Amino acid sequence: MKIKSQKDFFSGLMFTVVGAAFGYGATSYTIGSGARMGPGYFPLLLGVILTLLGAVILFKSLVVETTDGEPLGAWAWKPLFYIIAGNLLFGILLGGLPSIGFPAMGLIVAIFGTTIVVSMAGDQFKFTETVVLSIILSLMSYAAFIMLLKLQFPVWPSFISG
Image (cartoon, rainbow, N blue to C red; front, side):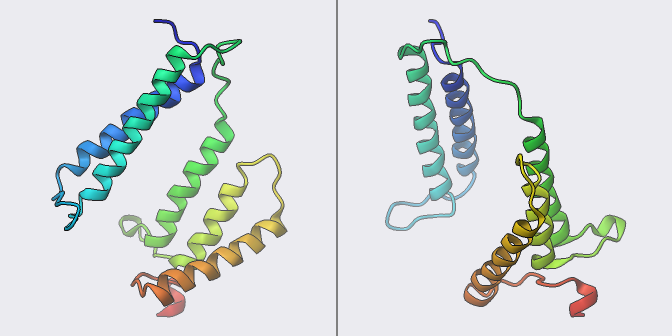
């Protein structure tokens, strides 16, 4: 069978693999039932839906004819690097690295650092817009996670808050 759309084929394959991994990982938790859902219910359901979506996209890539086969383009290395670096930076800034003595910087600093790094992934970087976005995200995250949900994790660096 000939692949008629490379983009759809590989995206469908990715969805199927990730969905199957989520579904398999969820089986190690208690699933429960529809009336009394366990901790594995939602990840299992999400994994099944993602796997089915991937299967549909895979099928479409093998059946629906395209004009040029929709070949894959070049990898976008710059955005890939900055987005992964931003996620790693968020984890490091929020929790610190005790093994090397780097303290936790808290939610606000983590959001500012991550927003600045991830915004460099685009074609244009405007520092003023990035800072405004960081302020808005920080305020909304503080309101949602600290004030409304009352989650307990550091908001400010430990050397500031004590």
